[in-house]
Length: 248
Image (cartoon, rainbow, N blue to C red; front, side, top):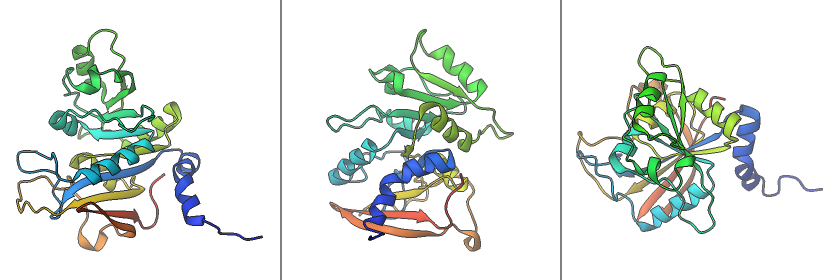
């Protein structure tokens, strides 16, 4: 009897299922497209396109494996994304938007396209009331209201656990933006980081960085293990797994 055959590949294959069963929440992959100096967009919030066609094609395969694609309200306001996998035969993942203030307009494609029934907005009770006033009667969009803290933010851990419990979501792909990425990282909810760096430098302090919010000082900085570094056309993919595991 031989043991350990293809162990690494098997662990990667069942990682979302293991997180779902053992941690009662989905596995969270954070994917960000960045300039070499760590910027998500220029100072005018333009990000199309930082990375090249091979990297964007790779993202479609990443989306295909996800049960839900998660973004912040700022990303929807800036880019009006579809958040769908365009590969043939791909299923329709949940499209989850974190919008605590309920500021999204009803005209966004996530609310109006043929897949609106797969759109879920995580918000607060006040935000949900604002969105209900904007969305047309009978809208298939799902609204989940979470109790906010004194800063108006709600628990992302509660959102993830509810996605696992009520929607059977095992793998969440977060595609930003910086505020949501920072909140997930600070809450220790990211299982693996997929950072795609383009050979571009903006050199602009006003351009948004990869993470917003208050992070750590150097002695307490999060450390991770590099599990993959490879080329995607002219871009560079860096995959990192946090050391010490993640919050369940």
